[in-house]
Image 1 (cartoon, helix red, strand yellow):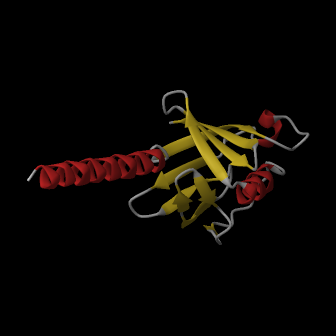
Image 2 (cartoon, one colour):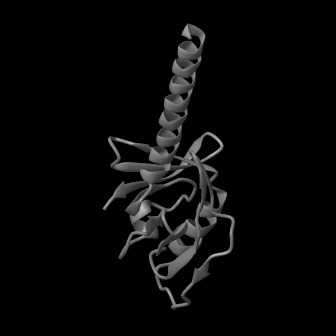
Length: 144
């Protein structure tokens, strides 16, 4: 009898701990949900305000539909969202509008940098999104 009770308690703890870890993983991904505005991009020698003089790029994550969309300072884009825990993949083809842009290189810099991103972190109590390549923060966004 005591042996059965001990086994029952053990499996109860196991079940509870599995559910806690599932929620934690899901919670990490759910922090991406919503609209974000770019405030830093790594790489170009042109000042941030020079790359995006009129409009800053945005990114929107729809976790339920597994979609990513936004505006790259000129054109809108959309594609499939591929995210697992803190790993993220923007190498899937994205659809984009084809408006003529007079802002210079900002659009190309944004899209090429986005394709290099391999992971992310959400900091500042959910207010800042860092898109990372290897161990280098390539882009930083603020929650809108």
